Image (cartoon, rainbow, N blue to C red; front, top):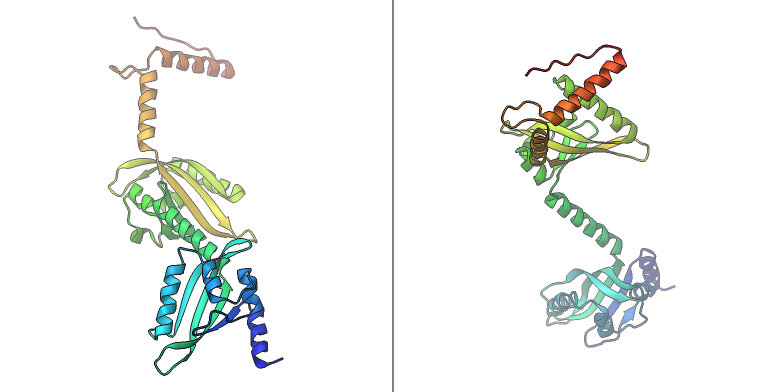
Length: 292
């Protein structure tokens, strides 16, 4: 095998397609891997350019003109090429290897590599980043030691905190031993659920930066590695303060007199029924005092 043939085979084995065109000639030389990547046996430059997506072709043509005119010696473009399987994202590298005495390119070498997986991964990352930034719910990511790694804007807006002061801190909703005994009991149940199922969901009372109380719907999930070791804790919060206040108002209207704030007849009957059930269960007499 010639040295050139060996290089083509080596590049093809690495997934790179190679092509060569000379100035003034539409026909060139293309490697088997180039043909495989493009689903075409043609070595025509114009035929290959026709397979490039309409949205990608103008920028490529401008870049090639700059190469031919001497403005640049190499260029790189990620573009879509029509193949038998549909549009495929390819990374194209173009290099001028010979010029005439006027500086015009007389010989171009191009390489192609499949960038579909990388492009798809980048698209997924961009989508995830966009969702993270624009999600209406607050989102916080903490490491295995409960230190905050990142938060989205909604989280900081709900609690009135800045991203900078949250990073590296332990969020109050993850602290295992708060002073309030009722909150401490809730945290014990939360951590028990996280250890057993990796997920907990419930309502939490929290305070904003300005001291105002707020009601939050909180979902906490753990992200584990392949061996089950906790890598991250993910908190998703929704501000349900107004809904909670509305629910409390409806409950008061249903069970309490608006003027006296005393239990109304419906609430009285509920309380009497509960007391009678407790009396029967405990074996004690129940006395009702009626004042006229």
